[in-house]
Length: 261
Image (cartoon, rainbow, N blue to C red):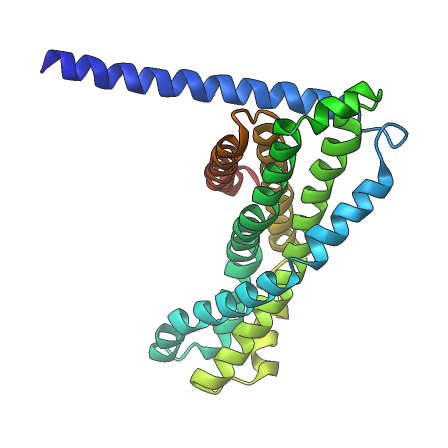
């Protein structure tokens, strides 16, 4: 029994040490990325190419997620507002939840699963097939050419997709409100624009989206570059990247909810 307890404590301690080591390596990578972040040092054409892939090709999943998430908010809230005769507050409730929480969070998880995982797989494949070493042999800095454009591309993509997702989620919520309780589109949007929702609520969600993009970008780049062990190693890196990104997103969401008014 004592041996079992010691083994359990050992595993917990090893996990904490591994997490601290991973965070330290990610911070080191962040410093190297920031050193190469001047426009003259990274490939801007690569940034535009990655933005096209990350943002435009992510639109279908963002559209579906946003429309249904907005409708789900109204489905849950509609019985309550009907019970108290507060149908006019449905727009405010849905808008407040979508703009500050649901829009940034769900969009970040979708982008993490699609863009972040793909970025990790791309970089990991380049590492195990020695393409990254080939770039170094040609005197091309892999961070400037591969990592920095992807890092900023993911942050910009998530910020843009959050704005798009917020608008679609509110549209889906308005349609659901009209279908379920007969609240007109005009009445729904009056609840959003009537003064109860302020610009700081919109800014709160946008700040969160930028922070979520940062953690997704940093996690995917780190685990991609740290890949080893051939094709199975790429799979392990993708799994670790998705888990770290999701955990980081929820942890940042918790702390930013207190820090950002």
